[in-house]
Length: 618
Image 1 (cartoon, rainbow, N blue to C red):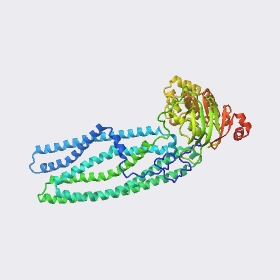
Image 2 (image 1 turned 135 degrees about the vertical axis):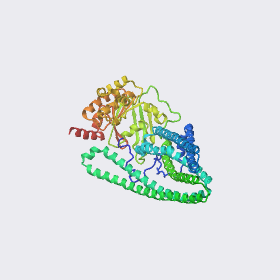
Image 3 (image 1 turned 180 degrees about the vertical axis):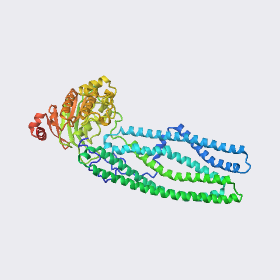
Image 4 (image 1 turned 120 degrees about the horizontal axis):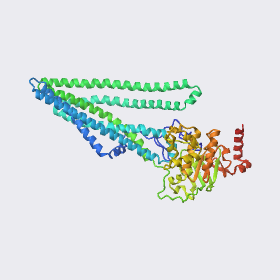
């Protein structure tokens, strides 16, 4: 995107300003989203999960089975101790007691496997559905949305936030339900076994839970900081490796290594605090838990000695008490995880609820057939949403006839690229009208408008796919014969034929398997296949060497034939043959005419041409 299009890190977005969770619509101030202290955002997540009632039913059945089996184990221990560890016990009864215990263990194992499968399946399915819905909505949003919302930050939501939700659905909710069932059932069983001991245990459990909650909050805070420090490491590595040529060209390897060491040490210091807190929590919890067990067994031993309860009862009581304490302790951690999930869900919900500023009207006006390719700008004024105080175009009026080639030139920031963005209806002007074949763009479906336009950008944007898919991106149903014909016209056939697997060759991320000139010729072939009546050339040869520029220029001449063509060019030598040259300055047309006429006029174009041709001659 060129200088007349503001970017996220423009000066009107200072580095020390808090970054909004999601930008407000144009004209509204964006405020940072507060951290969620409510579980309400999880409704969206659970609403998605409810679309799979069969799997939820199986998961709940498995939860009930595993909780019941868990509580049945202490009871079987009671039976075994009371019947099998007394003198004169019947070996058959002993065998039956242990057989029942083994059966319970088998049921517990199978139920746990069933629970794990269905709960994990639901978690993965919910995350997949949310990602699909978010991506579907993101593809509907206009480019203005991505000026004020960083794609990297959005990508983070699609990965890290969905991972949190997956953990909530696939683990946290399961843990909460299982421990709730275990806790309630366990307390009931404890009351049945020994009411007085249960009262003492219920008084002691909060003494164990309170330090877990205290340390848990501190550990969560430090863990968040630790994750931020780890993210800093990743961001640093990406930045430096992406600029490795610059680092090595300027001999800054040692300095970058020192910077990286500083980032890593910061991560280590944060991790050390987390480790110390966990060690302290572990010490306190172990002392309290085992101290409580000793006291319960002491009191139980006295009761056994007095003949008030049996040895099996005290053993079952201790085991069940441990299960109850563990269940309640786990529930205290669950709330924090649910809050994190709610925060992640609210961030994703913002992406789901974002509305495109450019949308089809309720009853779009159909563009005339056959297409003519005329364009009309009348008194157009436009300001970018991220920079409303500066007009990119001011009272801009221009009529372009079908089949005409119009070159748009001017200094950086004059508004050249803005014209292209408005023609494709990525934005709507704040004033004036733009018409395509006589139809106002705001009255037509954006998809219909763009179907009549082929774009060749300054840098040939290619995708991580094979050559065939990159070439037919503008016309997906194109045959191989059509593709080769377009490649031939774009001077791209020879190098495409030499690829190891021909059109099936994977071109790498961003088309890295091809040179810049080859990428640009693929972009031209893609535009040829589009076969649209309007062609937009955005400095299509500016980044090429002389040989590649000549080949690309030859391909462009064939592409421009019988099409309405708008050309943005800094290299004025490439637009001499244009039917008309429009000179922009600060969003206004200051001159227009042929190359010869403008050169003789001695205005801005003549000055730009004189400076550029003198530089080329030197």
